[in-house]
Image (cartoon, rainbow, N blue to C red; front, side):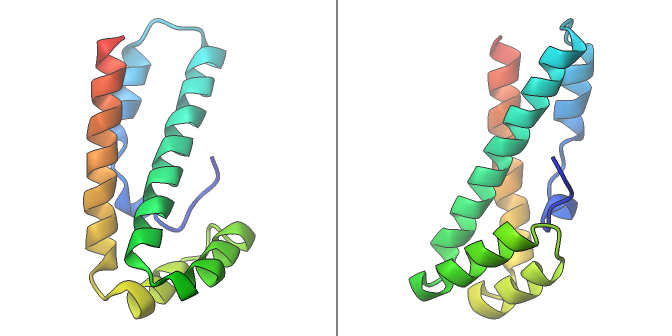
Length: 107
């Protein structure tokens, strides 16, 4: 997936290491990486929407759709969801990564 505004808040190194150890074809690993990125994206966007007042949802989603890489999205979120939003996103991302790791290790 392309660079996203929250990438610096998501620690995926354990997932990447686990995937490197899995004996699968590279195209299958690529599909798995895409699914993982999608799960993280949906989880973080959903989390942010819970933190934003409903009247800010449309603007946020429009910005993410048009410029998902824009670091100014964090500034927008700090203004409308609280100055500690980065730490909250990091914490949510950690929970998502743990869930994904559990699911990958079961297989």
